[in-house]
Amino acid sequence: MKSKLALLIFLAVFCTFATCQAKPLHLSAAASMTDAIKEIMTAFTAAYPEAEILPNFASSGSLAKQIAHGAPADIYISANPKWMEYLIDNQLIAPGTATIFAYNQLVFITANADRLENGSLDSLLTLERVAIGDPKSVPAGRYAQQAMERGGIYQQLRAERKFIFAKDVRQALLYADRGEVDGAFVYKTDALLVKNAKIAFQVPDDLYDRVSYPVGITATAAKNELARAFYQFIKGDEAAAILSRYGFEPVSKQ
Image (cartoon, rainbow, N blue to C red):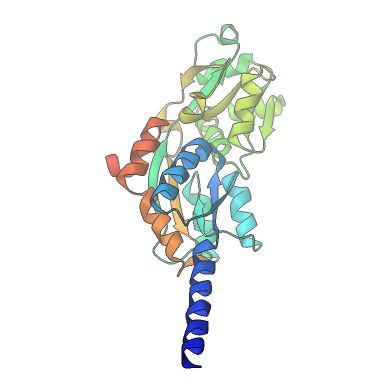
């Protein structure tokens, strides 16, 4: 009788442990990190075979709002500190976990290089359709707006209705690569993925805030060991090597 009871207790504990181990890790990551994160996920699951990761790629603002409305998320990766701070202010990020782990740069791409007079911000005034991520929710769009405002051309382009607002930076990239717009503001890492478009110019660094990627563990996953393992992994050397291959600048390599 005692042996049967012991067996039942063992099975209950084992099943609980197995269920815990099989629980998926929900990852919300900025769209501009899609390819790098997918490779990091592969490397992580090689080290943690029990891990099942369910990624959600979208604009940083959209993801932050989803989390604020109760969407499942254990790890949040933003393309700027603003949306991470939004979640911190709403007590939705575990205290002390938000940290910047990578950087990027802003460029302008076009499939019609002959349309640009001198490869500078001023040359955008000669274009008819310029794609940027919606600055209200897309960090790349916000950075682009900053650069154009400081460059003195944003209001004119807006008044002339030349902007095509994209839901995220990858959509802006597709518009430019397909020739549906005259050009688009994207990250340097995204520009490496185009088939037809080329980098017309790199936006001067002093015209916009540094493109920073913070990662944080959500408040609901504060005690989730798998989430903490992934959090440490993405800041480590193996992830840094992957990020570098995709054109990001890992903090650990500075």
